Length: 442
Image 1 (cartoon, rainbow, N blue to C red):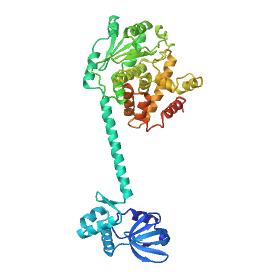
Image 2 (tube, rainbow, N blue to C red; image 1 turned 90 degrees about the vertical axis):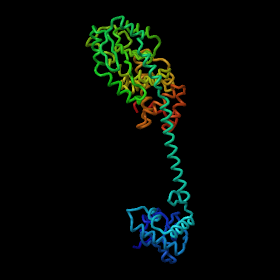
Image 3 (cartoon, rainbow, N blue to C red; image 1 turned 60 degrees about the horizontal axis):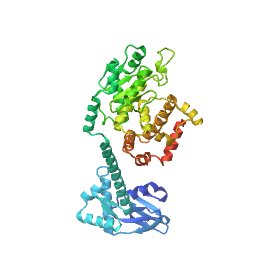
């Protein structure tokens, strides 16, 4: 088989990557090196033998030729024969090692070294190729170590078994709120594996409220833990008390009994006592009205239950520390799918400049008092959480949990962001711009 210069492009590429074994070395002006045995030369071109047959190249394409001894060329032919004979059965390297005589192996290695090749793990490489290989291996090892260290750090973030038992023991004590509802003869509508649900059974409105969340709240609990990526941290052995507030008087009394809390217009949660308070009518006076078909509940009890359950689980994960409100509200809304607001409303608010800026959002220390302001705050927070979680693929929840833990441990938003998300965003300004675009529905 003989090929001329116009038909050898792909062949040359293949020949250049075949393991070098000795023989003459043809160096092209492109820098490529071809292993072969020179057969014919003229003033116009050169023909040489290769493992795939004869090849003819114009002299203009050749930079120089390094010629080797007859013994070396004979060795090259022998290796070609072995490779051709056992092609598809063994790698060339194995053939050379197993079937060459000691004298041939010595000559082979001397030839490789003379050509400037370096042996590494029974393979021969040029110096640049070996440096690239070792650099890639080092980078791969560093990446594995980094992921391993991240995993170790995150494991340390989890509460110890001793802390978990202490939390469960504390939760077994009756809180002031629970003593209050028992004294007021509230009914315990249902007991599940994870929840006690309290309300006043004789009121029609409260019956409907209780029915909304009494389906299977334990399933909601399990799903939220999995979705949030914190199932390894939390496993309730003591039930959470859920109170459905029937009127404005009960709402005011409960807030007084519980004391300072992150109260919203629709309820709140207390992680330390493992309690959830729900006011589906909102903190607007509507709770004093009787339920009629013309007056819908502002947010149904099941929607609010999902929201406050996500909130209390997240608070427990963060060890009920004083963390930014956006981190609590946004996470609760994102994972519970509450959907308190929408992009159409937000777009109008942006045009009217009735919204919190990025810097104001992450610094806000108290929930807005009005329902609309609260809903807008939750929506803005949810958008930020969604962007951060989606910055990673399957590890989005893990990265976000690490980020939240750093903030809980006292790191600033900027420092935690740069440590976890430095490779996902150009800068903090880049995150802010993406957040604002998402608010506008773009």
